[in-house]
Image (cartoon, rainbow, N blue to C red; front, side, top):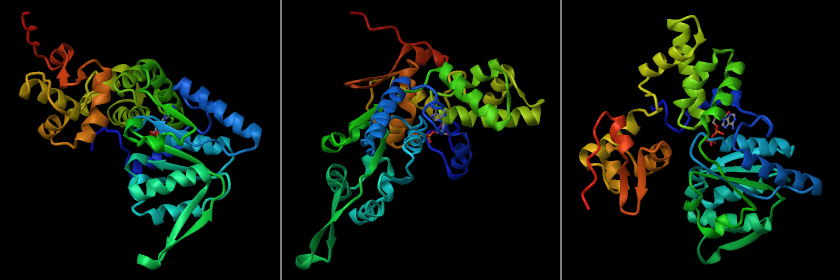
Length: 334
Ligand code: ADP
């Protein structure tokens, strides 16, 4: 799988659990989100109430699950984790909601992928702390109203724009999480290196941070690969040159692009003359789902100034041509 891909598998989840910050103070970067969320939680605590529902939007690996855990921790409440795709029937959601304890935090990852009937059930649960459970089938079916204890829903989505407005509006607080700056990722790496007992030198940290596509999960992942390399081929000390040599082996280039990213840029430049080309056409050319290209590859390519989204489609910037060692076409004469 992709070394710089967004998602984590089970094994990685276990390592990540050890690296997760457990309080807002320990959470690095996203200053605005942290300040605002701090206020929301302080206000709820002062009132002795459960916190408002929170929507977190941002790409994979930016810390949404971590923030949900922190919210529960700061509220002294238990946390329940589930996801949109895991709830296939409204009944699944009713079962989860009706088993919540008072004050509990329910984390609903990929909330934009919730099936319609479940989504509608969620409206009432969020607003009135009530669900209608349908018992029986056909003409004899009856809806039994069920009171729910007050709870806090933390929804996570890769793009808030994917959510229907009635759902978005039911969140008291929406936080948009941006890609992290290299300096912030250096702090994430220094913290992780401390926990993992890796001898990470400043130039090693900056080399890894610059290649982590603005994403803490990727920074932590690259750190583990670089540590392997340093232990096997070197003395275990991660310096800049050691990190560069390791990442070259894993085909992560100096901008942090991997094979998929370079594939997207190469297709854009070589097959479509630099664009504009539609997302789905581009995705077919690289053999990926449009959502993968859009959510995993594009945000960073845009941030790095290599790709632009225009109303007519995606275009490669001159920097993309240069990055691939090619000369961009001269602008058309006017
Ligand atoms: P998401 O839910 O958005 O996919 P996670 O919350 O699972 O992302 O974060 C992925 C990994 O990155 C976790 O191991 C977490 O410890 C680390 N991480 C994310 N955000 C931060 C942060 N702001 N500070 C320190 N570590 C972070």
